[in-house]
Image (cartoon, rainbow, N blue to C red; front, side, top):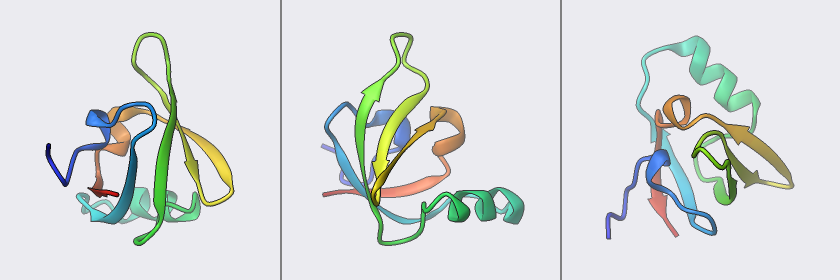
Length: 79
């Protein structure tokens, strides 16, 4: 099992810690940070849409829906 999966590889129930970002786009990174997707935060996949996209995750004390392609810029480590 890959210990550092892409966001798109996560399945319902999986948990992963954000360890960094794979983007040079500071504006997009700022958007991720403003949504609470900061280093050290653990997210959990709650639901995957019937066609596979978007994915609902629990972050801190709230829920977010993210598109897999956009969220693949997150560097993750399974927990």
